[in-house]
Amino acid sequence: MKQLFKIFLLALIIFMIAIYTLTAWGFWSHQRINRMAVFALPPEMFGFYKYHIDYLTTHAVDPDKRRYAVEGEAACHFIDLDRYGKNPFDSIPQYWNDAVAKYTEDTLMAHGIVPWHIEKMMFRLTNAFKQKDFEKILKYSGDIGHYIGDAHVPLHCTQNYNGQLTNQHGIHGFWESRVPELIGEEYDFITGRCRYIKNPLKEAWRIVKDSYNAHDSVLDFERELSSKFPADRKYSYIQKGNVMMKVHSEEYAKAYDKMLNSMAERRMRESIILVASFWYTAWINSGQPDLGELSGKDFSEATIEQMKKEEIDWNNGTLKVKGHDE
Image (tube, rainbow, N blue to C red; front, side, top):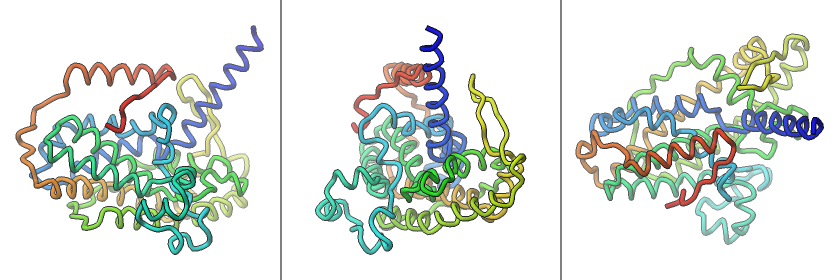
Protein backbone atom coordinates (compact mmCIF):
# COMPACT_ATOMS: atom_id res chain seq x y z
CA MET A 1 0.00 0.00 0.00
CA LYS A 2 2.81 2.41 0.87
CA GLN A 3 4.47 1.62 -2.46
CA LEU A 4 1.26 2.39 -4.34
CA PHE A 5 0.93 5.67 -2.46
CA LYS A 6 4.50 6.64 -3.40
CA ILE A 7 3.80 5.86 -7.05
CA PHE A 8 0.62 7.94 -6.93
CA LEU A 9 2.41 10.86 -5.28
CA LEU A 10 5.21 10.75 -7.84
CA ALA A 11 2.68 10.73 -10.69
CA LEU A 12 0.90 13.71 -9.15
CA ILE A 13 4.15 15.67 -8.86
CA ILE A 14 5.06 14.90 -12.47
CA PHE A 15 1.59 15.99 -13.57
CA MET A 16 1.83 19.26 -11.64
CA ILE A 17 5.24 19.98 -13.12
CA ALA A 18 3.88 19.28 -16.61
CA ILE A 19 1.04 21.74 -16.02
CA TYR A 20 3.55 24.36 -14.90
CA THR A 21 6.08 23.87 -17.68
CA LEU A 22 3.84 23.21 -20.67
CA THR A 23 1.02 25.69 -20.13
CA ALA A 24 1.59 28.55 -22.52
CA TRP A 25 2.44 31.87 -20.86
CA GLY A 26 1.29 30.50 -17.52
CA PHE A 27 -2.06 31.38 -16.00
CA TRP A 28 -0.85 34.75 -14.68
CA SER A 29 0.28 35.96 -18.10
CA HIS A 30 -2.78 34.76 -20.04
CA GLN A 31 -5.07 36.41 -17.53
CA ARG A 32 -3.10 39.66 -17.62
CA ILE A 33 -3.13 39.73 -21.44
CA ASN A 34 -6.93 39.41 -21.66
CA ARG A 35 -7.47 41.87 -18.83
CA MET A 36 -5.26 44.59 -20.26
CA ALA A 37 -6.67 44.10 -23.79
CA VAL A 38 -9.97 45.54 -22.53
CA PHE A 39 -8.31 48.93 -22.01
CA ALA A 40 -7.19 49.08 -25.66
CA LEU A 41 -10.78 48.98 -26.96
CA PRO A 42 -12.74 51.95 -28.36
CA PRO A 43 -15.55 53.51 -26.28
CA GLU A 44 -18.25 51.62 -28.21
CA MET A 45 -16.87 48.31 -26.89
CA PHE A 46 -15.15 49.34 -23.68
CA GLY A 47 -18.24 49.55 -21.47
CA PHE A 48 -19.40 46.02 -22.27
CA TYR A 49 -15.95 44.45 -21.96
CA LYS A 50 -15.07 46.42 -18.83
CA TYR A 51 -18.27 45.21 -17.14
CA HIS A 52 -17.20 41.62 -17.84
CA ILE A 53 -13.47 42.08 -17.31
CA ASP A 54 -13.37 39.62 -14.43
CA TYR A 55 -14.87 36.88 -16.59
CA LEU A 56 -12.42 37.59 -19.43
CA THR A 57 -9.55 37.50 -16.94
CA THR A 58 -10.55 34.35 -15.10
CA HIS A 59 -11.53 32.39 -18.22
CA ALA A 60 -8.46 33.37 -20.22
CA VAL A 61 -7.04 29.99 -19.17
CA ASP A 62 -10.02 27.81 -20.15
CA PRO A 63 -8.34 26.51 -23.33
CA ASP A 64 -5.38 25.28 -21.30
CA LYS A 65 -7.73 23.44 -18.97
CA ARG A 66 -9.38 21.78 -21.98
CA ARG A 67 -6.03 20.52 -23.29
CA TYR A 68 -6.28 17.54 -20.98
CA ALA A 69 -9.97 16.85 -21.55
CA VAL A 70 -10.82 17.51 -25.21
CA GLU A 71 -9.42 15.56 -28.13
CA GLY A 72 -7.64 17.80 -30.64
CA GLU A 73 -7.46 20.80 -28.29
CA ALA A 74 -3.70 20.57 -27.72
CA ALA A 75 -2.98 21.13 -31.42
CA CYS A 76 -4.74 24.52 -31.27
CA HIS A 77 -2.02 26.03 -29.06
CA PHE A 78 1.13 25.67 -31.18
CA ILE A 79 2.67 24.97 -34.57
CA ASP A 80 6.01 23.19 -34.99
CA LEU A 81 7.17 25.17 -37.99
CA ASP A 82 10.62 23.59 -38.20
CA ARG A 83 9.02 20.24 -39.00
CA TYR A 84 8.28 21.68 -42.44
CA GLY A 85 11.91 22.25 -43.42
CA LYS A 86 14.51 24.99 -43.11
CA ASN A 87 12.26 27.56 -44.79
CA PRO A 88 8.81 26.60 -43.45
CA PHE A 89 7.06 29.73 -44.66
CA ASP A 90 8.00 28.81 -48.22
CA SER A 91 6.56 25.34 -47.70
CA ILE A 92 3.33 25.67 -45.71
CA PRO A 93 0.27 27.03 -47.57
CA GLN A 94 -1.46 29.69 -45.48
CA TYR A 95 -4.97 28.49 -46.30
CA TRP A 96 -6.21 25.44 -44.41
CA ASN A 97 -7.62 23.51 -47.38
CA ASP A 98 -4.43 24.00 -49.36
CA ALA A 99 -2.34 22.86 -46.38
CA VAL A 100 -4.53 19.77 -45.91
CA ALA A 101 -4.20 18.93 -49.58
CA LYS A 102 -0.43 19.13 -49.35
CA TYR A 103 0.24 17.52 -45.96
CA THR A 104 -3.05 15.81 -44.81
CA GLU A 105 -5.09 16.90 -41.82
CA ASP A 106 -3.49 14.30 -39.55
CA THR A 107 -0.04 15.77 -40.21
CA LEU A 108 -1.22 19.30 -39.54
CA MET A 109 -2.88 18.27 -36.30
CA ALA A 110 0.26 16.45 -35.19
CA HIS A 111 2.42 19.53 -35.82
CA GLY A 112 -0.02 22.16 -34.50
CA ILE A 113 -2.64 24.45 -36.05
CA VAL A 114 -2.64 27.67 -34.01
CA PRO A 115 -2.80 30.21 -36.92
CA TRP A 116 -5.71 28.39 -38.55
CA HIS A 117 -7.46 27.99 -35.21
CA ILE A 118 -7.22 31.73 -34.57
CA GLU A 119 -9.03 32.25 -37.88
CA LYS A 120 -11.71 29.73 -36.85
CA MET A 121 -12.21 31.46 -33.51
CA MET A 122 -12.44 34.79 -35.31
CA PHE A 123 -15.28 33.40 -37.44
CA ARG A 124 -17.12 32.20 -34.33
CA LEU A 125 -16.66 35.48 -32.49
CA THR A 126 -17.88 37.47 -35.49
CA ASN A 127 -21.02 35.31 -35.70
CA ALA A 128 -21.60 35.70 -31.97
CA PHE A 129 -21.56 39.48 -32.41
CA LYS A 130 -23.97 39.23 -35.37
CA GLN A 131 -26.37 37.17 -33.27
CA LYS A 132 -25.85 39.38 -30.21
CA ASP A 133 -25.26 36.16 -28.30
CA PHE A 134 -24.05 37.53 -24.99
CA GLU A 135 -22.57 34.30 -23.64
CA LYS A 136 -20.78 33.30 -26.83
CA ILE A 137 -19.32 36.78 -27.31
CA LEU A 138 -17.60 36.49 -23.95
CA LYS A 139 -16.65 32.84 -24.34
CA TYR A 140 -15.05 33.31 -27.75
CA SER A 141 -13.44 36.61 -26.74
CA GLY A 142 -11.74 34.85 -23.86
CA ASP A 143 -10.73 31.88 -25.98
CA ILE A 144 -9.32 33.78 -28.95
CA GLY A 145 -7.32 35.91 -26.52
CA HIS A 146 -5.70 32.74 -25.24
CA TYR A 147 -4.74 31.42 -28.68
CA ILE A 148 -3.37 34.79 -29.80
CA GLY A 149 -1.25 34.84 -26.65
CA ASP A 150 -0.01 31.33 -27.43
CA ALA A 151 0.98 32.32 -30.95
CA HIS A 152 3.26 35.00 -29.49
CA VAL A 153 5.35 32.44 -27.60
CA PRO A 154 8.54 31.56 -29.56
CA LEU A 155 8.72 28.06 -28.10
CA HIS A 156 5.23 27.36 -29.44
CA CYS A 157 6.63 27.47 -32.95
CA THR A 158 9.34 24.83 -32.73
CA GLN A 159 9.52 21.09 -32.14
CA ASN A 160 12.19 21.84 -29.52
CA TYR A 161 9.42 23.40 -27.45
CA ASN A 162 10.86 22.50 -24.06
CA GLY A 163 14.56 22.39 -24.92
CA GLN A 164 14.38 18.60 -24.92
CA LEU A 165 16.47 18.39 -28.11
CA THR A 166 19.26 20.63 -26.74
CA ASN A 167 19.44 19.47 -23.12
CA GLN A 168 17.57 22.57 -21.91
CA HIS A 169 14.65 20.79 -20.28
CA GLY A 170 12.27 23.19 -18.55
CA ILE A 171 13.02 26.26 -20.66
CA HIS A 172 9.38 26.36 -21.77
CA GLY A 173 8.01 27.14 -18.33
CA PHE A 174 11.06 29.25 -17.53
CA TRP A 175 10.59 31.70 -20.41
CA GLU A 176 6.83 32.01 -20.46
CA SER A 177 5.87 31.45 -16.82
CA ARG A 178 8.73 31.91 -14.39
CA VAL A 179 10.19 35.09 -15.93
CA PRO A 180 6.85 36.97 -16.31
CA GLU A 181 5.62 35.90 -12.88
CA LEU A 182 8.79 37.25 -11.28
CA ILE A 183 9.16 40.46 -13.28
CA GLY A 184 5.72 41.04 -14.81
CA GLU A 185 4.54 43.57 -12.27
CA GLU A 186 7.26 45.87 -13.61
CA TYR A 187 6.12 45.51 -17.24
CA ASP A 188 4.57 48.44 -19.10
CA PHE A 189 1.20 47.25 -20.39
CA ILE A 190 -0.06 50.59 -21.73
CA THR A 191 -0.30 49.77 -25.43
CA GLY A 192 -2.52 52.44 -26.95
CA ARG A 193 -5.67 51.90 -29.02
CA CYS A 194 -6.34 48.73 -30.99
CA ARG A 195 -6.59 48.65 -34.79
CA TYR A 196 -8.67 47.03 -37.52
CA ILE A 197 -7.11 43.90 -39.05
CA LYS A 198 -7.85 43.57 -42.76
CA ASN A 199 -6.81 39.94 -43.04
CA PRO A 200 -6.97 38.02 -39.72
CA LEU A 201 -5.43 34.82 -41.13
CA LYS A 202 -2.52 36.73 -42.63
CA GLU A 203 -2.03 38.51 -39.31
CA ALA A 204 -2.04 35.19 -37.43
CA TRP A 205 0.71 33.95 -39.74
CA ARG A 206 2.69 37.14 -39.19
CA ILE A 207 2.50 36.56 -35.44
CA VAL A 208 3.84 33.01 -35.61
CA LYS A 209 6.54 34.06 -38.06
CA ASP A 210 7.79 36.69 -35.60
CA SER A 211 7.67 34.09 -32.83
CA TYR A 212 9.54 31.54 -34.90
CA ASN A 213 12.23 34.06 -35.78
CA ALA A 214 12.79 34.63 -32.04
CA HIS A 215 12.95 31.00 -30.90
CA ASP A 216 16.69 30.60 -31.59
CA SER A 217 17.46 33.53 -29.29
CA VAL A 218 15.30 32.04 -26.54
CA LEU A 219 17.30 28.83 -26.67
CA ASP A 220 20.77 30.15 -27.51
CA PHE A 221 20.83 32.89 -24.88
CA GLU A 222 19.75 30.50 -22.13
CA ARG A 223 22.47 28.05 -23.14
CA GLU A 224 25.05 30.85 -23.05
CA LEU A 225 23.87 32.11 -19.67
CA SER A 226 23.80 28.61 -18.20
CA SER A 227 27.41 28.00 -19.23
CA LYS A 228 28.74 30.93 -17.19
CA PHE A 229 26.22 31.31 -14.35
CA PRO A 230 27.20 29.89 -10.91
CA ALA A 231 25.52 26.49 -10.70
CA ASP A 232 24.64 26.87 -7.01
CA ARG A 233 22.64 30.06 -7.76
CA LYS A 234 20.78 28.88 -10.84
CA TYR A 235 17.86 27.16 -9.06
CA SER A 236 15.63 27.66 -6.05
CA TYR A 237 12.49 25.98 -4.65
CA ILE A 238 8.92 27.26 -4.49
CA GLN A 239 5.68 25.88 -3.12
CA LYS A 240 2.97 25.17 -5.75
CA GLY A 241 -0.05 23.99 -3.84
CA ASN A 242 1.13 20.97 -1.88
CA VAL A 243 4.10 20.40 -4.18
CA MET A 244 7.62 21.74 -3.64
CA MET A 245 9.05 22.53 -7.06
CA LYS A 246 12.58 23.19 -8.27
CA VAL A 247 12.60 26.33 -10.44
CA HIS A 248 15.08 28.77 -11.90
CA SER A 249 16.12 31.36 -9.35
CA GLU A 250 15.02 34.98 -9.47
CA GLU A 251 18.62 36.06 -10.04
CA TYR A 252 18.95 33.72 -13.02
CA ALA A 253 15.57 34.78 -14.44
CA LYS A 254 16.45 38.47 -14.30
CA ALA A 255 19.84 37.87 -15.93
CA TYR A 256 18.14 35.90 -18.71
CA ASP A 257 15.46 38.56 -19.25
CA LYS A 258 18.18 41.22 -19.53
CA MET A 259 20.05 39.18 -22.16
CA LEU A 260 16.84 38.92 -24.19
CA ASN A 261 16.18 42.65 -23.86
CA SER A 262 12.83 42.00 -22.11
CA MET A 263 11.51 39.79 -24.90
CA ALA A 264 8.73 38.36 -22.73
CA GLU A 265 7.44 41.85 -21.99
CA ARG A 266 7.54 42.81 -25.66
CA ARG A 267 5.66 39.66 -26.71
CA MET A 268 3.07 40.22 -23.97
CA ARG A 269 2.56 43.83 -25.05
CA GLU A 270 1.97 42.79 -28.63
CA SER A 271 -0.36 40.03 -27.46
CA ILE A 272 -2.45 42.61 -25.60
CA ILE A 273 -2.86 44.97 -28.54
CA LEU A 274 -3.54 42.10 -30.94
CA VAL A 275 -6.18 40.52 -28.70
CA ALA A 276 -8.01 43.84 -28.55
CA SER A 277 -7.56 44.29 -32.29
CA PHE A 278 -9.07 40.89 -33.09
CA TRP A 279 -12.03 41.61 -30.79
CA TYR A 280 -12.49 44.99 -32.48
CA THR A 281 -12.21 43.52 -35.98
CA ALA A 282 -14.82 40.86 -35.23
CA TRP A 283 -17.15 43.56 -33.94
CA ILE A 284 -16.60 45.74 -37.03
CA ASN A 285 -17.09 42.80 -39.41
CA SER A 286 -20.32 41.83 -37.66
CA GLY A 287 -21.86 45.23 -38.41
CA GLN A 288 -20.91 47.04 -35.18
CA PRO A 289 -23.87 45.90 -33.06
CA ASP A 290 -24.86 48.09 -30.13
CA LEU A 291 -23.22 46.39 -27.16
CA GLY A 292 -25.04 48.77 -24.86
CA GLU A 293 -28.09 46.54 -25.32
CA LEU A 294 -26.12 43.72 -23.68
CA SER A 295 -24.66 45.76 -20.84
CA GLY A 296 -25.65 44.58 -17.40
CA LYS A 297 -26.61 41.12 -18.61
CA ASP A 298 -25.20 38.12 -16.85
CA PHE A 299 -24.89 34.43 -17.56
CA SER A 300 -27.87 32.14 -17.17
CA GLU A 301 -28.09 30.08 -14.00
CA ALA A 302 -27.50 26.92 -16.03
CA THR A 303 -24.28 28.35 -17.50
CA ILE A 304 -23.07 29.53 -14.11
CA GLU A 305 -23.68 26.10 -12.62
CA GLN A 306 -21.83 24.48 -15.53
CA MET A 307 -18.85 26.80 -15.05
CA LYS A 308 -18.78 26.02 -11.34
CA LYS A 309 -18.86 22.31 -12.06
CA GLU A 310 -16.03 22.57 -14.59
CA GLU A 311 -13.91 24.50 -12.08
CA ILE A 312 -14.50 21.86 -9.42
CA ASP A 313 -13.71 19.09 -11.91
CA TRP A 314 -10.52 20.88 -12.95
CA ASN A 315 -9.37 21.26 -9.36
CA ASN A 316 -10.11 17.58 -8.79
CA GLY A 317 -8.38 16.52 -12.00
CA THR A 318 -11.55 15.09 -13.56
CA LEU A 319 -12.50 17.83 -16.05
CA LYS A 320 -14.52 16.59 -19.02
CA VAL A 321 -15.75 19.28 -21.41
CA LYS A 322 -18.42 18.61 -24.01
CA GLY A 323 -19.68 20.82 -26.79
CA HIS A 324 -16.75 23.26 -26.61
CA ASP A 325 -16.95 23.85 -30.37
CA GLU A 326 -20.61 24.83 -30.39
